[in-house]
Length: 108
Image (tube, rainbow, N blue to C red):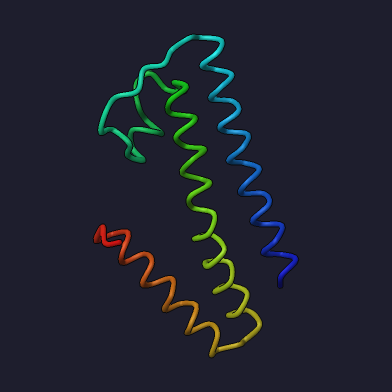
């Protein structure tokens, strides 16, 4: 279980690093440092015009990095569920529920 979650975390952090690096390379190549204020939304990152602006890619990399701990909790729920460890499945599921609810409500 720990090996699976460890590799998942490594892959997530690596993906984040690659995205940030690509964004920085795009910035150095294009010199485009435009970044609209108050537009940091998932829709803006993925479908913003024009697509693949350096600021889009860098911010997406940071979002992947920030989402890495949440990914660990989701993976833990799945692993506990598959191993039929119901106590930890419920506890970890409750932690996940609190985190998701607080993100939706903007609390914390």
